[in-house]
Length: 294
Image (cartoon, rainbow, N blue to C red):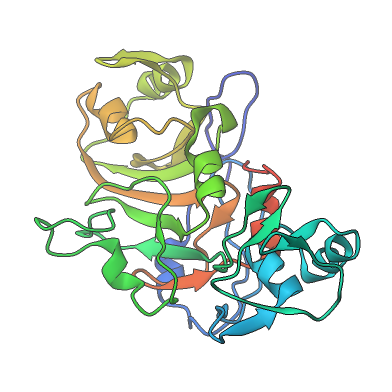
């Protein structure tokens, strides 16, 4: 079915999100790929076994360096051989040496944190607050990932209480800064359900730009999800301003009845039922760290 689209520069097609169908899928099956609104490209991700953390008193130095996020274990062996790793102030070139969590291990003069980095993709339900701790909230997203890992993870950005969909949680501070900083333009796509049909000229204005109380804003791409249903709109945006999608539609007098984030920085929630989570694959993590956020 032909889709309607408005975009600055060039057109993109917006395909309907299949999160409802995904909620009925067997979570133990491999995701088969999800159509996302503007690119019409299927993303297929393999499931990954639960990540492990350092639990013993002593670990091999190459694993310590790899878990600190410096490089892979194989590349860590190369750094050790070159004398670029120090342990308690001494250069170590011996392979197979073990170190403890209290040892001072450094690379380029910087002390390494051996805690393994964890990346959790959650399909957030309604009525959960996106925060690590809130004494006024009955439920937070952390309640949904309590058994995910031993590490202390936290949400990357926010989804408001009534918004559902893709939310990433991690203990990787550097990646969090990249994904949330405006200059990196991490793409976000939302499926919007309004209380009444949206006029086509309002779609045009969302694409060309409007001015809200906190400044101008425009959608990177926007279209009707289905030609016959004008109450469902897909919108691509990279802004992280508070409640920005809801406010863009409220600007024209529409009430957003449901808002679902279906895409974030190259990730989709395909194969993850509402309220469930999975670990990112190594391929997905590598892609994010490489700055491929579209």
